[in-house]
Each structure stands twice: as structure tokens, then as C-alpha cells.
Length: 158
Image 1 (tube, rainbow, N blue to C red):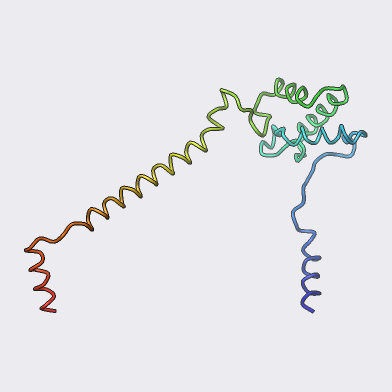
Image 2 (image 1 turned 45 degrees about the vertical axis):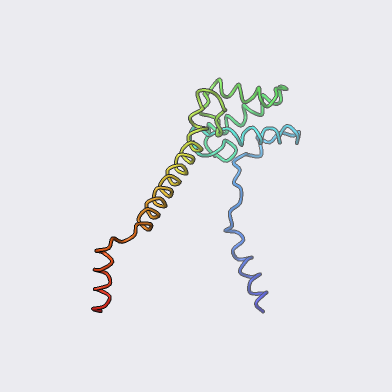
């Protein structure tokens, strides 16, 4: 009974589960499956200049459609994936790439996150070490004779 209930819940919820939303229209799809696969690989890495956080493969914007058609046209002409991407970058700039290229002018993009991480680890290590040294120093101090007498007097009173 429980199994039937769980299957029913899953089937009821299945239409609302996330699925990849591709904006590629049927008229854009190439007849050659190998070329279409290459086009999808390229368009997955190109940013929609209207939506900016979507690839042109996922975007419904007219400019994204134009870019998808452009990619497919250039592939049909026999260009390599690199040539197609280089053409789009030369036309629209490197911002069109969802994943920026590793180059001197993009070095800060690639190195900022690891650098901040290692600085954070270093600061935490130094702070931990400083606290450990302070705890060790404060714990290793012995009481003076006067402090011992005062302590024993307090203990006897209580």
C-alpha cells in the first residue's frame, strides 16, 4: 500500500520536476546529427548577450536565436569548433564566453578565488596558532606564594 502511494506521489510530481529547457527551435536543428551535436557543444558555452546568465542554447531571446543560426551556418561551411567560437568572440567580444579563456588579461578571474581561499586558510591558521600559544602561556603560569595563600584562605572559608 505504501509503495503504491509513493509511486502515485512521484507520478503526480513528475511534471513539475526540473528538466533541461532548450530554446532550440525545430527549424534550427541540423539534419546531420554530428554537426548538430557540435553546434550544441558550442552554443552551450556561448552567453546570451540579452539574458547574460544563460547560454544561447537555453535562451529564447531573438539574439540568441541569431547566434545559434550563425553557429550552425558556420559549421555547415566546414569550420572547426575553435574557428566558430573565435569568429563569435571577434564579433561580440570575450564577454560572449560563459567560461572566460585563461589569458593574461583574465588572470584575476581565474586566480582570485583560490587566492582568497588560501589567504583565509592562512589567517585562520595564524589565529588558531596565536590562541594556542596564548592558552599555553596563560596555563603554564604558576601562582605566586601570596596567590597560593589567598586561594587556600578562600577555599577554607567556603
